[in-house]
Image 1 (tube, rainbow, N blue to C red):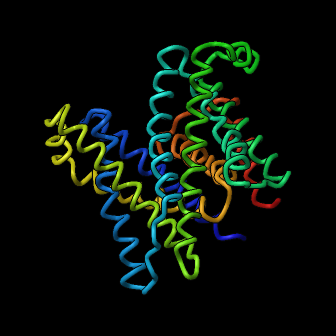
Image 2: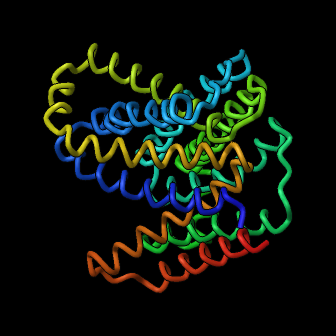
Length: 304
């Protein structure tokens, strides 16, 4: 088994923990505060990862270059834009339509990766991407009265178009992070995927934390005080988020963003497992079918 597979699965599990923690904090903080917790409290852990590799293991730090900075800035901007597009999609159309079309990010990442980075994907991986995307769309539809036919008929709606833009931005963000990490390999005597991923993460999360902190300082200083009061939960969200992001960036360094995004859908299975075994909630046949499609797609991806 290639190493990016268990790392991506572990990242998806850690992201599930981070998401659960952020939901808990959402009742205590505003959206921007809960968002900052993910980056601000994760920044020390990202620095710790790089410090261990550099000072503990003696691995050299990569030299940054223009290509790296262009990819990092583009990735950060696209990640923020994706969130904004997704929120706008919900306001123009149903939550289901916006979510379903935004989930095309893996497909769009495959196209963008080929165009921008020359990434080529095997036919089995393409099939796996299609299956996992179909699975998450099925899960989105299972909680509503909307059918696949209804989803297609809503294609020309404003919400669907904005949802597609959200998916494109998510896909471009992931592809850009891969481009940034690969660019660092040019500055190392011996390319090291762990250091490349860790350094990209540290740079990115520092920029995002600074931007959010400045925004809060200008628009809502009281939110900074509320964040300080929930520092224990913030540390949990930051640690799990940093571990998840480190895993994603390692995956992006070793494999195309589209393939990593497809395997990352395993997070949906963790979510539904929590729903069934922890919260004792019932799931519909449609949700079970969606989960089955995701499992089948992951098996095709891993075994293909």
